[in-house]
Length: 100
Image (cartoon, rainbow, N blue to C red; front, side):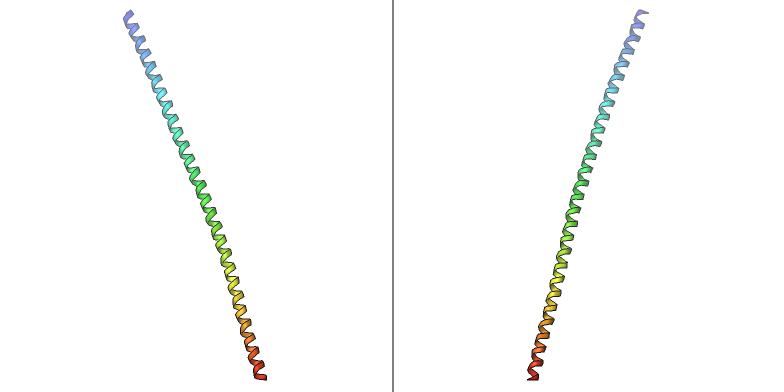
């Protein structure tokens, strides 16, 4: 009987060790999964930040482009007005020449 008790105690100890090892492995796996999740979050955050930066640059470029278009449009209008004034001056010169 002494041997049976000792065998049973050894089985209990083995089971306890096995359970401790399993628990350590589970904890280790959970830590790995958490690190992986954190890594994904960091990458997502970086990607989002880069996207926001790129979008801001594109928006700024479009705004600058829009301002440039507006400047070109104003210059073109001014040129057109100048052409009209020049034509008017030519007509006036022609009218004065006819009057003489």
